[in-house]
Length: 461
Image (cartoon, rainbow, N blue to C red; front, side, top):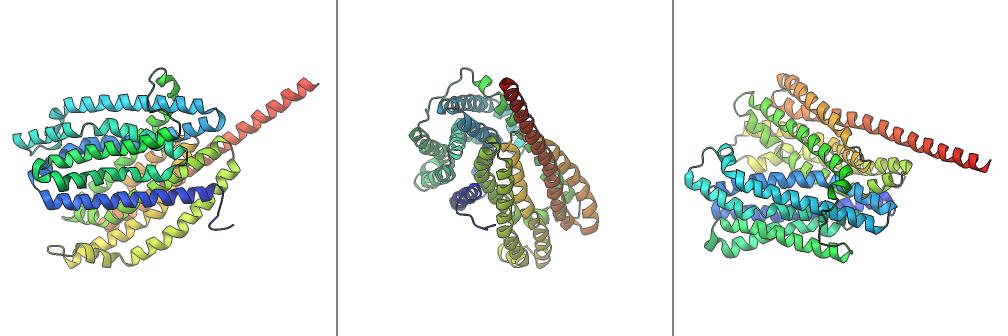
């Protein structure tokens, strides 16, 4: 087996993942510059607090939308492309576009009306003036939600057509626009320039994506007539993804609650120690999932189970070949990295030692998370996202038990070590369920083929 193939599904997944990862790093790099410049202009002022509070809910809704739509919509688009004329793919795309745009617009209107009631819960310490500023900033950023719906659907369409580069790089428009408006308008508009830049950046991203979608021959006008009927299977997969995401979201809450129950400072040690692993997990598995999903969906749409299994093993082996040495080096340099980044002022040498231990243990979960990302996308490609829900339930149960037991032995470091046990339990459960589902689908195809052969034989007789 060649390690780095030049053609075939594995080569396509490697190429797509590399493009998405490079685009993600570029977007995060410019985003970091925007964060640094905004901190230079506004520091930790009330205005900065107001912006962060206003941005919290739109950002959360946008992230949930982006994370749940792609695994549900991309396999459906590829299924239509594989077995139907282009009109079927266009019809499905326009239905998804219309439904997403209407739902996001209604969510934006509901958020604008309900935010005065939500804000006292999100920011109970804000006075009247600060709360009023937060509400005004939110109104400026409400267009982000419908724009995000457009951008998510268009990125799904481009990824389904193997146009990864623009889909990966287009989100850089938001931090670039924010930087430009901050530089030229901060003296005039103050903190409003940050909110204006966020909305303007989403609009620029939408323009870039819309041009490419139109060039591929897809209309930019949504269609609502019959949308729910056409999107029935997609909406079913979307609902299961949201449910599993909510379950997985409980795991970090459990980790933090367990850390908070230990000695003073343990929660801070856990937060600092898991930061590097969280950054890697937010970039690596996400890029892998985006790059692998279209190819896995094509193999599943063609019922090429042998090719699917071979591509998964090959691509997974390549990922581990890259990931394991990288994680080993980071673990060896863990204490030096913590000392370089954090050990200043009140951050003591003892704190550096404890944070480095947590960081070493938390990094161990990265190779497992990489394999888990492939498993999740395999489930999506087979339209079997409901299998992720029991795996997520097992993960929540194991996280609770492992956190409780290991923190008694190792303290806060045990909670980081428990994340490895949790990842392993999720992968094992999902792998078992996926293998059984693939066997069932293969048996169904064989039975169908046997039935057709019997009918043909009977007709001949």
